[in-house]
Image (cartoon, rainbow, N blue to C red; front, side):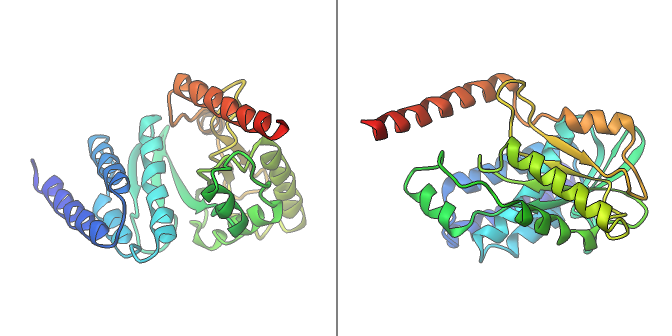
Length: 260
């Protein structure tokens, strides 16, 4: 084990102890350990900075999960053939830097949080009956990240959600909204090369990610990168298909029980 790996493992061990003391569940600690292990195996850089940022967010579980998504997306990039991936590579600027086809791309992660109504529904076990996420909230989440983008570079805002509430219809509406915003204020969005939506899985095609490209950006996404981003996979399609079938069955049982 080289010095870099040993140092990372030491920082991880300290973080896991702090998480335990702060009341984080064993499943969250195990998930972090598995994530860091895969990031190391796939050669992702700056993992120590990532762990230190997580450590600084332990007082707020939501804040901790915001940073955790950066590691999870770095893992997705590594699984899909991106190279020289660095997470938390600098104090200010986009969250992740990576290369694809010899081009450098910067990713800024925007995590969509649940509102109070959604949280109460989830606590009651009604995760299949959420209200649609408001389109203007999606735009606000993107606008908040514009100041983090790298001037004159390929910049992508990744809108992340672990829920099923941002579906395909909401994504399509959000894209129309973004297009109108850019048409009205192209200079404001000139550093935004694109937006990548991480949910809204199409159960028919099993497409897991949805890309909007800004044709007015100062640095536009090249064709090969567009195709790659549109075909990103986090999970095996067969696994997704089983999960979709299980979710459909759960929703059907709940609807049937309400009819009765």
